[in-house]
Length: 311
Image 1: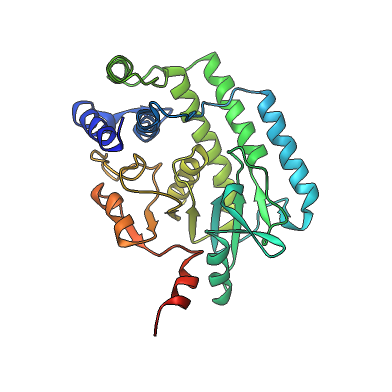
Image 2 (image 1 turned 45 degrees about the horizontal axis):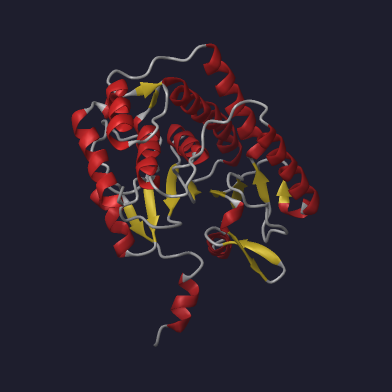
C-alpha cells in the first residue's frame, strides 16, 4: 500500500472507531495500534519484518545481553554503570553513531551535548540496542546501556500476560477483522497488545526511577515510536518533564508523524510534547496532525551548513 493510502485508511479507522477511548492496562492503546497497523500497511510487498513483543528468556535476548557485556568491556570509560544528574537526558541507539576520528559520535545528540556544555549544562545519554547493529565503540561520550533492564521489564510483562491478559478494547475486534480481511495485514492479538502495553508500563516505571535520579529539564528521543521511546515519553509526562522527539528520518506520509486526526482530551500520554524537525518542510507533517513541531535543524549537519553559507 502506498503511504498516502495508508494515511487514508488510518484516518478512516479513526473516524469510524472510538480509538481515543481505547485503554489497556490503564494506558491509551491507539498510539501502539496505529503505529503497528500503519507500518504494517506500508510494509506490504516489501522485505520488512516488524518486531513482536519479546518472550521471556529467548535465545535472541541472551545474544543481545552478551553484546551489552562485550560493549561495556571494550569501552569501560564510555559506559555508565548508574544514572547521574543531568540537565537534559537523551535516548538513542547505536545505529545513530558515526565514526569521527578515533571515536563514534552520536549524530543527533553529541552536537547537542556540545552546545549544552558551552552553556555550562550537563547531559546523560541512554543507549538502547534494538536493531541488528553492533554497539559502536569507543564512544565519544559515555552512555548508560539500558537494554538489560528493559529486557527484564519486557519479560515480566509477557509472563504476566500469558497468565492473564485483559480483553481487547470494545470495537477493536471489528477493526482487526477489517485490517486482516480487507488489507491483508496481521493485527495485534489481544494478548500481544496487552504484552506491549504492559511492557511500556513496566519500562516507564524504570525510566521514572532514572528521571528521579537525573532530574532533567527535558528528555530528547531519536525515535519516539519504539517501545522504549513511548515508555520514556510516558515517564516524562508523569513527572512533568518536557519530552521531545528529534527527527531521524522522513516525516511526510510517515504514520508516526502524519495523518493523526483523533485525540483524547489532553492528548496521548505516550506521545512526546514536541517534535524537533530539520526544516519547515519536515514540520508540515506533524503540524497537519495538530502535533507541536519546532524547526531546530539537523544537529549534526547544521554547523557544517552554516560554514558553507555565503556571508
